[in-house]
Image (cartoon, rainbow, N blue to C red; front, side, top):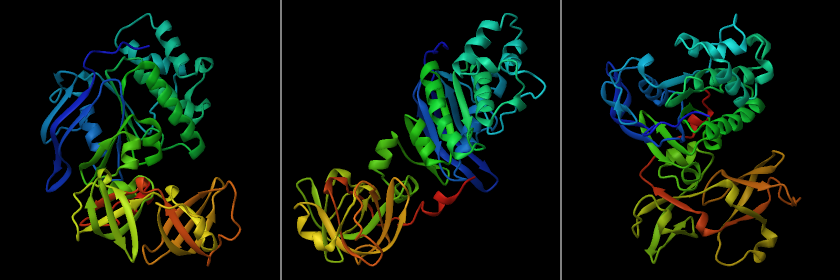
Length: 383
Protein backbone atom coordinates (compact mmCIF):
# COMPACT_ATOMS: atom_id res chain seq x y z
CA UNK A 1 0.00 0.00 0.00
CA UNK A 2 2.72 2.44 1.03
CA UNK A 3 6.12 2.67 -0.62
CA UNK A 4 8.75 1.30 1.70
CA UNK A 5 11.56 3.83 1.84
CA UNK A 6 15.15 2.61 1.79
CA UNK A 7 16.80 2.58 5.19
CA UNK A 8 13.49 3.18 6.93
CA UNK A 9 14.78 2.14 10.32
CA UNK A 10 15.09 4.16 13.53
CA UNK A 11 18.53 4.46 15.08
CA UNK A 12 19.14 6.02 18.46
CA UNK A 13 22.79 6.58 19.38
CA UNK A 14 23.75 7.59 22.92
CA UNK A 15 20.35 9.21 23.39
CA UNK A 16 19.39 10.31 26.90
CA UNK A 17 16.97 12.67 28.64
CA UNK A 18 17.38 14.38 31.99
CA UNK A 19 15.07 16.80 33.77
CA UNK A 20 17.20 18.64 36.32
CA UNK A 21 18.65 15.95 38.58
CA UNK A 22 16.23 13.25 37.32
CA UNK A 23 17.33 10.97 34.47
CA UNK A 24 14.29 9.73 32.54
CA UNK A 25 16.33 7.88 29.91
CA UNK A 26 19.95 6.81 30.46
CA UNK A 27 22.27 6.89 27.40
CA UNK A 28 20.71 4.43 25.00
CA UNK A 29 21.72 2.81 21.71
CA UNK A 30 18.80 1.24 19.88
CA UNK A 31 18.15 0.13 16.31
CA UNK A 32 14.66 -0.58 15.00
CA UNK A 33 14.83 -2.74 11.84
CA UNK A 34 13.10 -1.41 8.74
CA UNK A 35 9.56 -2.69 8.26
CA UNK A 36 9.33 -4.24 11.73
CA UNK A 37 6.72 -3.95 14.45
CA UNK A 38 8.82 -2.83 17.43
CA UNK A 39 7.50 -2.45 20.99
CA UNK A 40 8.91 -0.43 23.88
CA UNK A 41 7.49 -2.24 26.91
CA UNK A 42 7.69 -1.25 30.54
CA UNK A 43 5.90 0.01 33.62
CA UNK A 44 4.91 3.60 34.23
CA UNK A 45 7.95 5.88 34.54
CA UNK A 46 10.41 3.51 32.81
CA UNK A 47 11.27 6.02 30.04
CA UNK A 48 9.42 4.39 27.13
CA UNK A 49 7.15 7.34 26.28
CA UNK A 50 10.03 9.81 26.65
CA UNK A 51 12.02 7.70 24.16
CA UNK A 52 9.09 7.71 21.72
CA UNK A 53 8.68 11.48 22.08
CA UNK A 54 12.39 11.98 21.28
CA UNK A 55 11.91 9.97 18.06
CA UNK A 56 8.88 12.14 17.22
CA UNK A 57 10.73 15.38 17.99
CA UNK A 58 8.34 16.28 20.81
CA UNK A 59 11.22 16.10 23.31
CA UNK A 60 14.79 17.27 22.74
CA UNK A 61 17.38 14.68 23.83
CA UNK A 62 19.90 15.81 26.44
CA UNK A 63 22.61 13.82 24.65
CA UNK A 64 22.80 11.65 21.54
CA UNK A 65 21.26 11.53 18.08
CA UNK A 66 18.10 10.29 16.35
CA UNK A 67 18.48 8.85 12.85
CA UNK A 68 15.63 7.90 10.53
CA UNK A 69 17.22 5.77 7.86
CA UNK A 70 20.55 7.46 7.14
CA UNK A 71 19.31 10.94 8.04
CA UNK A 72 20.14 12.64 11.34
CA UNK A 73 16.84 14.26 12.40
CA UNK A 74 17.89 15.22 15.94
CA UNK A 75 17.54 18.95 15.28
CA UNK A 76 14.48 18.77 13.01
CA UNK A 77 11.11 19.95 14.39
CA UNK A 78 8.32 17.31 14.53
CA UNK A 79 6.55 18.49 11.37
CA UNK A 80 9.72 18.06 9.30
CA UNK A 81 10.29 14.45 10.41
CA UNK A 82 8.90 11.60 8.26
CA UNK A 83 6.93 10.21 11.21
CA UNK A 84 3.34 10.29 12.39
CA UNK A 85 2.08 9.57 15.90
CA UNK A 86 -1.14 7.91 17.06
CA UNK A 87 -1.97 8.77 20.67
CA UNK A 88 -4.27 7.15 23.22
CA UNK A 89 -6.69 10.04 22.69
CA UNK A 90 -7.32 9.78 18.96
CA UNK A 91 -7.84 13.55 18.54
CA UNK A 92 -10.25 13.16 15.62
CA UNK A 93 -12.01 16.29 14.38
CA UNK A 94 -15.60 15.90 15.68
CA UNK A 95 -17.14 18.21 13.04
CA UNK A 96 -15.56 16.38 10.08
CA UNK A 97 -16.70 13.11 8.51
CA UNK A 98 -14.47 10.05 8.72
CA UNK A 99 -13.56 10.63 5.05
CA UNK A 100 -12.46 14.22 5.74
CA UNK A 101 -10.60 13.23 8.92
CA UNK A 102 -8.50 10.79 6.88
CA UNK A 103 -8.07 13.28 4.02
CA UNK A 104 -6.96 16.08 6.36
CA UNK A 105 -3.20 15.57 6.06
CA UNK A 106 -3.32 15.39 2.24
CA UNK A 107 -5.51 18.50 1.94
CA UNK A 108 -3.19 20.43 4.28
CA UNK A 109 -0.31 19.63 1.93
CA UNK A 110 -2.31 21.08 -0.96
CA UNK A 111 -3.13 17.75 -2.64
CA UNK A 112 -6.43 18.13 -4.48
CA UNK A 113 -7.10 14.66 -5.82
CA UNK A 114 -7.48 12.67 -2.61
CA UNK A 115 -10.36 10.30 -3.33
CA UNK A 116 -8.41 7.19 -4.35
CA UNK A 117 -5.92 7.50 -1.50
CA UNK A 118 -8.66 8.04 1.10
CA UNK A 119 -10.79 5.21 -0.27
CA UNK A 120 -7.80 2.85 -0.28
CA UNK A 121 -6.89 3.79 3.29
CA UNK A 122 -10.47 3.35 4.56
CA UNK A 123 -10.52 -0.04 2.84
CA UNK A 124 -7.25 -1.00 4.57
CA UNK A 125 -8.73 -0.29 8.01
CA UNK A 126 -12.06 -1.88 6.95
CA UNK A 127 -14.12 1.30 7.38
CA UNK A 128 -15.13 1.99 3.77
CA UNK A 129 -18.82 1.92 4.75
CA UNK A 130 -18.29 4.53 7.50
CA UNK A 131 -16.87 7.30 5.27
CA UNK A 132 -19.85 9.64 5.80
CA UNK A 133 -20.15 9.06 9.54
CA UNK A 134 -18.91 11.48 12.19
CA UNK A 135 -16.46 10.26 14.87
CA UNK A 136 -19.11 10.19 17.63
CA UNK A 137 -21.06 7.60 15.62
CA UNK A 138 -18.14 5.14 15.76
CA UNK A 139 -17.00 2.75 18.49
CA UNK A 140 -13.66 3.27 20.27
CA UNK A 141 -11.98 0.61 18.15
CA UNK A 142 -13.29 2.15 14.92
CA UNK A 143 -12.11 5.62 15.98
CA UNK A 144 -8.70 4.12 16.67
CA UNK A 145 -8.56 2.71 13.14
CA UNK A 146 -9.50 6.13 11.73
CA UNK A 147 -6.58 7.66 13.66
CA UNK A 148 -4.25 5.02 12.18
CA UNK A 149 -5.60 5.65 8.65
CA UNK A 150 -5.18 9.42 9.06
CA UNK A 151 -1.55 8.88 10.08
CA UNK A 152 -0.71 6.27 7.40
CA UNK A 153 -2.13 8.28 4.48
CA UNK A 154 0.81 10.66 4.87
CA UNK A 155 3.16 7.77 3.98
CA UNK A 156 5.37 8.20 7.03
CA UNK A 157 8.68 6.39 7.20
CA UNK A 158 7.77 5.40 10.76
CA UNK A 159 4.44 5.24 12.60
CA UNK A 160 4.68 5.88 16.34
CA UNK A 161 1.95 4.45 18.58
CA UNK A 162 1.71 5.78 22.14
CA UNK A 163 -0.49 3.41 24.21
CA UNK A 164 -3.10 3.54 21.41
CA UNK A 165 -5.28 0.75 22.83
CA UNK A 166 -5.29 1.94 26.45
CA UNK A 167 -8.82 3.39 26.32
CA UNK A 168 -10.45 0.22 24.95
CA UNK A 169 -12.05 -2.60 26.92
CA UNK A 170 -10.23 -5.94 27.08
CA UNK A 171 -12.11 -7.79 24.33
CA UNK A 172 -11.89 -4.88 21.88
CA UNK A 173 -8.23 -4.35 22.77
CA UNK A 174 -7.44 -7.94 21.80
CA UNK A 175 -9.29 -7.55 18.49
CA UNK A 176 -7.38 -4.33 17.78
CA UNK A 177 -4.03 -5.98 18.54
CA UNK A 178 -4.62 -8.40 15.66
CA UNK A 179 -6.01 -5.60 13.50
CA UNK A 180 -2.95 -3.37 14.00
CA UNK A 181 -0.61 -6.27 13.27
CA UNK A 182 -2.53 -7.01 10.05
CA UNK A 183 -2.34 -3.36 8.97
CA UNK A 184 1.39 -3.17 9.71
CA UNK A 185 2.04 -6.36 7.73
CA UNK A 186 0.04 -5.02 4.75
CA UNK A 187 1.66 -1.57 4.58
CA UNK A 188 5.18 -2.72 5.55
CA UNK A 189 5.93 0.51 7.43
CA UNK A 190 8.03 0.47 10.60
CA UNK A 191 5.76 0.68 13.67
CA UNK A 192 7.18 1.70 17.05
CA UNK A 193 4.64 0.95 19.76
CA UNK A 194 4.78 2.02 23.41
CA UNK A 195 2.83 -0.06 25.93
CA UNK A 196 2.81 -1.24 29.55
CA UNK A 197 0.76 -4.31 28.57
CA UNK A 198 2.95 -7.42 28.25
CA UNK A 199 0.36 -9.43 26.33
CA UNK A 200 -0.14 -6.57 23.88
CA UNK A 201 3.59 -6.30 23.15
CA UNK A 202 4.01 -10.04 22.75
CA UNK A 203 0.94 -10.38 20.50
CA UNK A 204 1.90 -7.65 18.04
CA UNK A 205 5.63 -7.02 18.05
CA UNK A 206 8.42 -8.77 16.12
CA UNK A 207 10.92 -7.28 18.55
CA UNK A 208 10.36 -6.07 22.13
CA UNK A 209 12.62 -3.81 24.19
CA UNK A 210 11.81 -4.24 27.89
CA UNK A 211 12.57 -0.95 29.66
CA UNK A 212 13.19 -0.46 33.36
CA UNK A 213 14.43 2.65 35.13
CA UNK A 214 15.32 4.47 31.90
CA UNK A 215 17.35 1.58 30.47
CA UNK A 216 16.66 -1.30 28.09
CA UNK A 217 16.79 -4.36 30.30
CA UNK A 218 16.56 -6.87 27.43
CA UNK A 219 15.83 -6.78 23.71
CA UNK A 220 14.62 -9.59 21.49
CA UNK A 221 11.76 -11.52 19.94
CA UNK A 222 8.81 -12.07 22.34
CA UNK A 223 9.44 -15.83 22.51
CA UNK A 224 13.15 -15.28 23.26
CA UNK A 225 12.39 -12.83 26.09
CA UNK A 226 9.79 -15.15 27.58
CA UNK A 227 11.76 -18.39 27.31
CA UNK A 228 15.21 -16.96 28.09
CA UNK A 229 14.92 -13.94 30.39
CA UNK A 230 18.33 -12.53 31.29
CA UNK A 231 17.29 -10.70 34.48
CA UNK A 232 14.81 -11.23 37.32
CA UNK A 233 12.96 -8.09 36.19
CA UNK A 234 12.27 -9.53 32.73
CA UNK A 235 11.43 -12.96 34.17
CA UNK A 236 8.83 -11.47 36.51
CA UNK A 237 7.53 -8.65 34.32
CA UNK A 238 6.84 -10.82 31.26
CA UNK A 239 4.33 -13.30 32.61
CA UNK A 240 5.03 -15.20 35.84
CA UNK A 241 8.22 -17.02 36.83
CA UNK A 242 8.93 -19.31 39.75
CA UNK A 243 12.42 -18.39 40.94
CA UNK A 244 14.12 -20.92 43.24
CA UNK A 245 17.20 -20.01 45.28
CA UNK A 246 19.70 -22.83 44.73
CA UNK A 247 23.34 -23.78 45.14
CA UNK A 248 25.44 -25.03 42.23
CA UNK A 249 26.58 -28.62 42.90
CA UNK A 250 28.09 -29.30 39.50
CA UNK A 251 28.65 -27.38 36.24
CA UNK A 252 30.14 -29.51 33.49
CA UNK A 253 29.36 -30.98 30.08
CA UNK A 254 26.74 -28.41 29.13
CA UNK A 255 24.56 -29.19 32.14
CA UNK A 256 24.28 -27.56 35.56
CA UNK A 257 23.14 -29.46 38.67
CA UNK A 258 21.86 -27.44 41.62
CA UNK A 259 20.41 -28.27 45.03
CA UNK A 260 17.57 -26.50 46.82
CA UNK A 261 16.21 -27.70 50.19
CA UNK A 262 17.44 -31.22 49.48
CA UNK A 263 16.01 -31.38 45.96
CA UNK A 264 18.41 -31.90 43.05
CA UNK A 265 17.50 -29.96 39.88
CA UNK A 266 19.16 -29.82 36.47
CA UNK A 267 19.22 -27.18 33.74
CA UNK A 268 21.14 -26.53 30.50
CA UNK A 269 24.26 -24.39 30.93
CA UNK A 270 23.21 -22.56 27.73
CA UNK A 271 20.12 -21.26 29.55
CA UNK A 272 22.12 -19.62 32.35
CA UNK A 273 22.35 -15.84 32.09
CA UNK A 274 25.42 -15.93 34.33
CA UNK A 275 28.45 -18.25 34.53
CA UNK A 276 27.52 -20.92 37.14
CA UNK A 277 30.34 -21.83 39.55
CA UNK A 278 30.39 -24.90 41.80
CA UNK A 279 29.50 -23.80 45.31
CA UNK A 280 28.02 -20.55 44.05
CA UNK A 281 24.40 -19.39 44.14
CA UNK A 282 21.95 -19.44 41.23
CA UNK A 283 18.31 -18.44 40.80
CA UNK A 284 16.65 -21.32 38.98
CA UNK A 285 13.54 -20.31 37.02
CA UNK A 286 10.61 -22.25 35.58
CA UNK A 287 7.35 -20.92 34.13
CA UNK A 288 4.08 -22.09 35.79
CA UNK A 289 2.70 -23.73 32.62
CA UNK A 290 5.84 -25.87 32.16
CA UNK A 291 5.24 -27.74 35.45
CA UNK A 292 3.11 -30.89 35.74
CA UNK A 293 1.35 -31.73 38.97
CA UNK A 294 0.87 -35.30 40.25
CA UNK A 295 -0.87 -36.45 43.39
CA UNK A 296 1.66 -37.93 45.85
CA UNK A 297 0.02 -41.36 45.40
CA UNK A 298 1.10 -41.30 41.73
CA UNK A 299 4.73 -40.35 42.39
CA UNK A 300 5.94 -43.71 41.07
CA UNK A 301 4.43 -43.04 37.63
CA UNK A 302 6.64 -40.01 36.94
CA UNK A 303 9.26 -40.65 34.24
CA UNK A 304 12.93 -40.66 35.20
CA UNK A 305 15.11 -37.70 34.26
CA UNK A 306 12.60 -34.98 35.15
CA UNK A 307 13.17 -32.21 37.68
CA UNK A 308 10.93 -32.96 40.65
CA UNK A 309 10.19 -32.15 44.27
CA UNK A 310 7.25 -32.44 46.66
CA UNK A 311 4.90 -29.85 48.07
CA UNK A 312 1.39 -29.21 49.34
CA UNK A 313 -1.42 -27.37 47.54
CA UNK A 314 -2.08 -24.12 49.44
CA UNK A 315 -4.66 -22.66 47.07
CA UNK A 316 -6.30 -23.22 43.69
CA UNK A 317 -8.29 -21.02 41.29
CA UNK A 318 -10.40 -22.25 38.39
CA UNK A 319 -9.74 -19.86 35.45
CA UNK A 320 -11.63 -21.74 32.72
CA UNK A 321 -8.85 -22.83 30.36
CA UNK A 322 -6.66 -23.77 33.31
CA UNK A 323 -6.59 -24.22 37.05
CA UNK A 324 -3.95 -22.14 38.79
CA UNK A 325 -2.38 -23.71 41.87
CA UNK A 326 -0.24 -22.19 44.60
CA UNK A 327 2.09 -24.82 46.10
CA UNK A 328 4.01 -24.55 49.36
CA UNK A 329 7.30 -26.44 49.40
CA UNK A 330 10.57 -26.19 51.31
CA UNK A 331 12.18 -25.74 47.86
CA UNK A 332 10.12 -22.62 47.07
CA UNK A 333 7.26 -21.00 48.98
CA UNK A 334 4.12 -20.01 47.02
CA UNK A 335 5.19 -21.65 43.80
CA UNK A 336 2.67 -21.21 40.95
CA UNK A 337 1.55 -24.00 38.62
CA UNK A 338 -0.93 -23.68 35.74
CA UNK A 339 -2.63 -26.93 34.72
CA UNK A 340 -4.78 -27.07 31.59
CA UNK A 341 -8.31 -28.26 32.23
CA UNK A 342 -8.23 -31.37 30.05
CA UNK A 343 -8.69 -34.22 32.52
CA UNK A 344 -8.99 -32.71 35.98
CA UNK A 345 -7.80 -34.80 38.92
CA UNK A 346 -10.39 -34.36 41.71
CA UNK A 347 -7.69 -35.17 44.29
CA UNK A 348 -5.80 -31.93 43.49
CA UNK A 349 -7.41 -29.73 46.14
CA UNK A 350 -5.96 -27.47 48.85
CA UNK A 351 -4.15 -29.57 51.46
CA UNK A 352 -3.23 -32.38 49.05
CA UNK A 353 0.37 -33.60 48.95
CA UNK A 354 1.73 -33.39 45.40
CA UNK A 355 4.83 -33.92 43.29
CA UNK A 356 5.84 -31.12 40.90
CA UNK A 357 7.82 -32.26 37.86
CA UNK A 358 9.03 -30.82 34.57
CA UNK A 359 11.54 -31.22 31.74
CA UNK A 360 14.99 -29.91 32.81
CA UNK A 361 15.28 -28.25 29.36
CA UNK A 362 12.50 -25.85 30.40
CA UNK A 363 14.58 -24.45 33.26
CA UNK A 364 16.64 -21.24 33.13
CA UNK A 365 19.26 -19.78 35.46
CA UNK A 366 19.74 -16.18 36.61
CA UNK A 367 22.34 -14.30 38.64
CA UNK A 368 21.43 -14.77 42.33
CA UNK A 369 22.83 -11.33 43.21
CA UNK A 370 19.70 -9.70 41.71
CA UNK A 371 16.51 -8.80 43.55
CA UNK A 372 14.37 -11.95 43.26
CA UNK A 373 11.17 -9.84 43.27
CA UNK A 374 12.25 -7.24 40.68
CA UNK A 375 9.39 -6.59 38.27
CA UNK A 376 6.71 -8.29 40.39
CA UNK A 377 4.84 -5.21 41.66
CA UNK A 378 5.14 -3.39 38.33
CA UNK A 379 2.91 -5.99 36.66
CA UNK A 380 -0.02 -4.52 38.60
CA UNK A 381 0.52 -1.03 37.22
CA UNK A 382 -1.86 0.19 34.57
CA UNK A 383 -0.49 3.61 33.65
